[in-house]
Length: 512
Image 1 (spheres, rainbow, N blue to C red):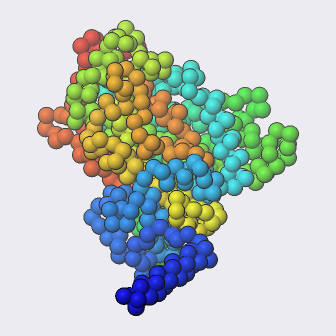
Image 2 (image 1 turned 30 degrees about the vertical axis):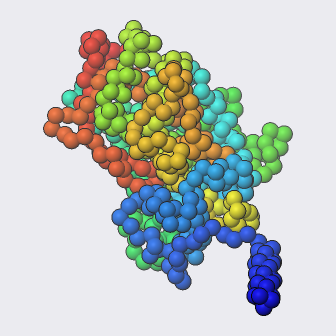
Image 3 (image 1 turned 180 degrees about the vertical axis):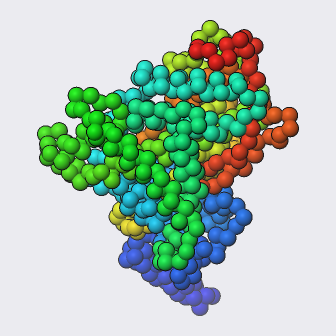
């Protein structure tokens, strides 16, 4: 019996020493990193990422094996994937400035002249000034402003006129034209008519950029592959050249007509900021803004076009697709419009508070089909942590918004399209039922155009649904709800039958 007690005591001592050794290692080396996918030299975790599914869907599936936050290697780059809202909000809010960096890639450098824009530009004093100037200019047309409401309503009227003229219509180019004209009015104080060659060129280059940027192409993982022929990279360069030619034309026109006494649009506001910087007028601007160049201005406007047009247009296309799939939702919105707005006038921004079901539907579209399911990657600017995990400086962090918005622990039946989840128990007030809802991101890198996008979505959809009942043409199948992954999650092309509602047939093409 004595030998057994001695053996137990010896085992306890050895166990204590082992625990102490492990604790000392933790103290010496710091907290461990997130669980990591298998990685090989040079290629990293690419073999583990082979899948028929789009990246956002694959990343959601991988958390079943590796947990909600894990890491992988993209070539030589360490990437942390965040699939749940607690860590996502640490990245975006609690440690927003630490994670405010952006990765440099071959394709985004081509798109932004080496990061001289806002969306892909790295966090710096110049970037902060840049963003401040654009935010201030957008506030001129901010939420509640009659000028931006008038611009959007003008385009909504034009869109409805086109819809009333065709039995079966591909809405994609018409929605793009309407949203493009809103952005053109903001940036250039101008707009495009249907069939305008410049507008057609813009459509072409925009689609080319969407098809080639931010798809984790091999040239972004292994930059040395640039030395070989690359069709996607060549297409991107051609589309960017067309875009830059159009932007340069507008820029030169504005410089020739510029006046210190008039601020017509965003480009005027940017020119004023640059001239102040060039003149070292430090009483008006911060000294770090002296680095603001022509390239910064052009890339900022290009950013606003790229982000402001493609994202809002894509959400509108998803909204129409889901309304066609769910006619009962469409009918309830129309009943709400008939009750609160009626047929004697057009919907206005001031009606938003009295149309909760329409607002809830917009929120549900943004949830179930987030326009940028992986957001834009962040970069840790210093050594930090994420929950219990260590994150080293230079680590890239991907917020999988798709996982957040389809988290079974946060959302009941997340694959079900249900606007009612954003309404209170009485069905008259709006709620955010989960902290996992982040359609525009958050924090330092939150989407600059959030307020504008919400205004456009509300006005375009309310105008359309007040006048038309949307359905699929008799010879067409229902729109696909799968989506094509790229810079944005695009729906497949589909046609719409827009049937004028009772009382609106006689008002075709007439102003409201």
